[in-house]
Image (cartoon, rainbow, N blue to C red; front, side, top):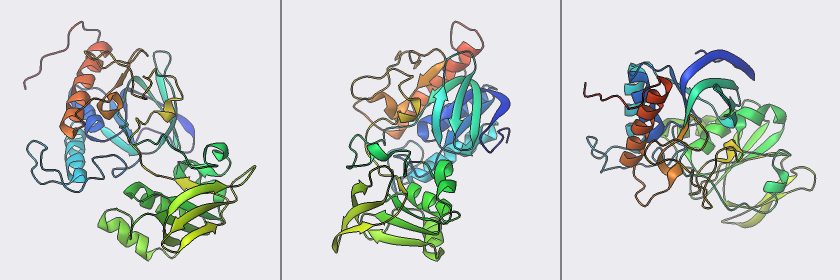
Length: 321
């Protein structure tokens, strides 16, 4: 891997950086790599996106009765066969001005000449009391970024999906105890992750729903409600991985214009945003039909347009091979 870990900047400049590895991002990688573009996909978790969490899909062409993760893995393998690279990391910021774009993650900075945003619409618009006020003061959304701050201390993780399980397992390498708060009887994660979760002596599972993050200047605990009523869990840190249906654009910090509903503004012919050489695809664009096949098509078209712009052509190349 060309990237240098440990919050340092890699000298490698990719032709195409793709943020998000679901059907849109993985398909964009397939088309970019097949066009001989040096392509990198940054994705925080296979199970973090809408398709990755879906256990049965019967309308994706050519893959009847497949699971969401199976579809994504198949597209990724095909993209990798043409040279696309995939890294598991969480994007926490981006510098998109200039000819070389920079994408900042918990493990370092990646650089590229064009960027495709494919982070989907699993963001949240509603926060619990205390959450926004204490972001950066004990509230975190990135274990890779902040786990080391809680070495030998107890932490809470809130979430019911595969991402919450993965982050709990990662945090157990640092924290003295990890309390995973999830709705339902158990989190929804792949069998091998659930097996790891069950075997980890540092992780405690609690069924409940987050009501409030407690503390004035820093996190002092969380208040949850569950089968036994309300309770307070005293922890100095809480990692929140609750899902919603808002376009995930927080890492852009307003650098890419959006509509009032949070969807990214693009030229629908080229998929380019109002920031030159930055494209957006899939559920980031909204639309009435939110289907994996539509997202994949968006990814293909955006990659074709990015390749055209990178190589200075006025028209996209026809490719029937």
